[in-house]
Amino acid sequence: MCLNLPTTVFEFMGWSWPQIEPHFQDLAARPLNADKVTAWLADWSHLSLLLQETYQRLYVATTVNTEDEEASTRFHAFLDDINPRAQAADQVLKEKLLRSGLEPAGFKIPLRNLRAEADLYREQNLPLLADEMRYWVEYDQIIGAQTVEWEGKEVTLLQLTPVYQNPDRSRREHAWQLAAARQLADRERINGLWVTLMDLRRQLADNAGRVNYRAYRWQQLMRFDYTPEDSKCFHRAIDEVAVPAVQRFYERRRKRLGLASLRPWDLEVDTFSRPRLRPFREVSELVEKTSAIFHCVDPTLGGYFDLMRDEGLLDLENRKSKAPGGYCTDFMIARRPFIFMNAVGLHDDVHTLLHEGGHAFHTFEMTKLPYAQQLQVGMEFIEVASITMELLGSPYLSQNGKGFYTPREAARARAEHLIMMLRFWPYMAVVDGFQHWVYENHAAASDPANCDSAWTDLWQRFMPGVDWSGLEAEMETGWQRKAHILQTPFYYIEYGLAQLGALQIWRNFLRDRAGAVAAYRRALALGGTVPLPQLYATAGARLSFDADTLGEAVELIENTVYQLEEEQDVFA
Image 1 (tube, helix red, strand yellow):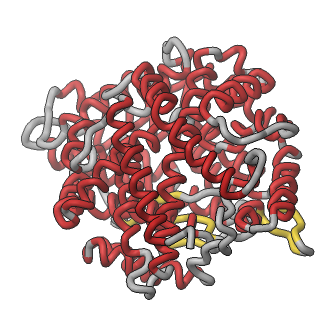
Image 2 (tube, rainbow, N blue to C red; image 1 turned 135 degrees about the vertical axis):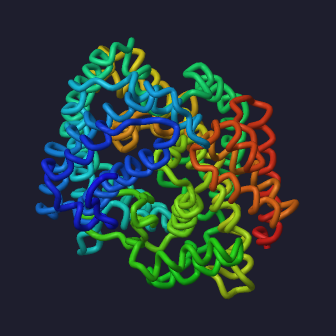
């Protein structure tokens, strides 16, 4: 047995490598056979989860306050001093298990993943991977520092977004232009960071003997169930089915607003000049009413969320020096998730919390799995867990006027959310298509000017219906404002595939609510013990890339939106 490993992470977080290394050495030296593999895996899992939770807690500390120099120093020390050595020592244990030929129960898929990781591992890549993480933090710091002065106050760009829903078009345009100018001010800094990242990623692929970074990243992401060509098939399906549907909605929007053309600042305002939805005033209200929604979906899920609230595992409000975006991470020694987001009082905040709540429920449902390696789930299904919860929670936004909205407001919010989901597929195709172009053309894409041109071509293909004339610089640099491109390459199609899976589960929910929720929870509890298509099937969906399946989902969205508009009586 490993000697004296802490049962919680807090003592372990202060350990140096000389304190950690003997536990790896102990595991590497132990005899491994059928009688001993279960205990050996349990000890390896505990050590792995201590390291993972240490990383997650240190990373969280850098995001809740991007100006916390002590947090940044501790995180970088972990990346420099411990993480590369731990990965090298972990590689020894992976190879030991693979050589043994043993396959414990529920370990077929984890073994497949371990083989892929062992095959991709190169010791010379460890410092490069540590550098890459540091550049993630640098990007967060650049974006986190972007503020403007609005009506005499310094505000973050996210805090400015409610203005885009203001009926006064000149006011919307002024806010949009102000934010865009601030973003463009960092254009050269992000270009410089991009060039550095491209050099680093080429070296990662070269060291691993891969033809390009896409091949390296595909294996790193454990994409065994679909290919780059499948991704491009999905792009074509989106072009065929989703893009025309979005154009139909844009044309309705243009006519209702009485405009000659839609501009970027015309996409969020209500077309009937109703004031923007105000779901909550304080974050405490967001938490209380979201809890009520989760309890309506399923009492157990509601209990999970309440536990997070009670244990301080929610950081939801937007503030200066907080990293952008939202995420849910897990502290798996503690068997708890943690939700981070930037709430500013929009409906987007409500469905973001529903979304991240789905991720959190995934963590809770997997806690019965005994080994760390079984917790490794493809992002394509991880995002099903979250997007599904946005949809399953949507019928309970009103709760007879006791929720976030009146019944009419709830119908409006649901319609807007579904239109947003429809609009997402073309944007996702731009982001994912851009990344395929980048890593198929690494030398050309290392010049940011070429990236601007490639992004523009994709934008014009997938995002028609909005007039960007005179805003060419703002449009062509859109890739700089998508954090996934710089920080987590190729992690974006997951959202599009998962959205299609979630809509299939929602369709089931409309017919049989209890049955759909039960299937959803069964699938979450499987963790990473079965292949991706089986996870989808267990949840009641199908992993799909074709225009027919996508077309069914688009039709469901459009029909539901028309029905919800009737409930709102929007033309009254």
